Length: 458
Image (cartoon, rainbow, N blue to C red; front, side, top):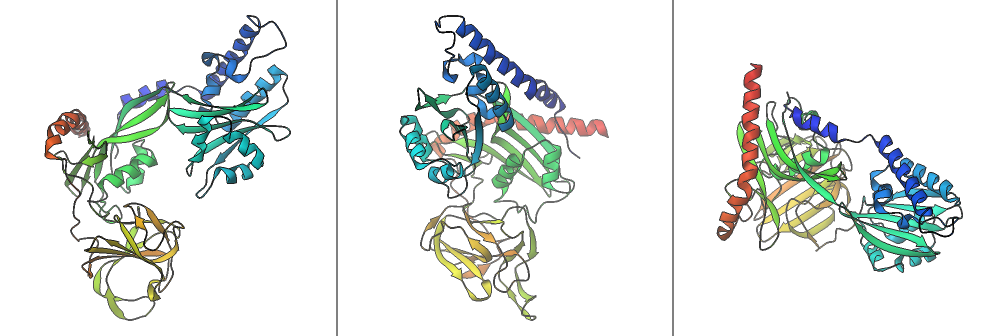
């Protein structure tokens, strides 16, 4: 069973613009802008404006090209080329891969090192390209000879870089875009899985993963989820020109697990500007260690003093927890620490050991491979991908063997007490209460509406 705010959904549907109609309107605006411009101050009727000469309100598709799919952008380009009697040009799109540099991306695009050098010398704004990240998107426009005509890189939701050829020289400009943040909410009751309930409630995968991350220190989402558990979430949605482009941050959330109610609210420290999630009382949701180092898996073998080993065929202690997961599933560092071992270790296969201060050690075994940036003696942050699930060593199938040691003694990772991070400082409690009270009130309203809806169905 899932309860959805239907009024909110209807309002969202009214706000959506049919993409094709919007594209036709935008192209028509471009044509109208060109006609008006060419019949105005221009003396040479054959001289047509460049893309950047067209007023912004007549060229919203240019300024916000990432709102268009690649085929739509190409269709627009073909119309512009015909209007201007230009040689045909082609848009291509490239996703930044892990370990990519701009040089590697240009090689994939079939562009020379000389063209890359020209881009980097096109203006100070082009320096933004020195810091590209995996999954970033870069769109490139080339003519029929393969010469770069334009490059577009979305820096953030609020800004993008446009490198465009003018008078046979590239010029780089960073543009800002007006962003609107709206508050949305959703809720659901789990019948079979959290993902299905979230999908029925219209929540994106990013929001549900963030929700699991917030409560992941208290709830093991591989083991603890029960039928009848429920969730409520208030979160941001980011809009550009009235069209939703992505989800923002979770503002507050509630998760009821096996009758236990967990609540979290987002708060930014006014002095350090650090944002974290806290209980309504100001205690940190964040523990020093994640309860589970892999996302949404199942427990295939628990912590026990005697277990029949499937490979050795004899009874022996199992001083950790096995998480069954697909080969290649990311393994996360349970806490901040230093890598004290990385390599092969007998029946453990590929292993990573992390020391957390002087008291705690975590062990990750049977790994398929390591994160290529992981270094022996290097520091890692909580939640950082350190390796990938495999079946090396004495393993019958892909899984993660995870151990938690306190002063060298093995403890059950599922039940060991996890120390919490610092709460809201006393001098900021008044600010905390004033900031989070309105958000928690909205969460309370959701709860009341749910109770009313359930009462009406009985």
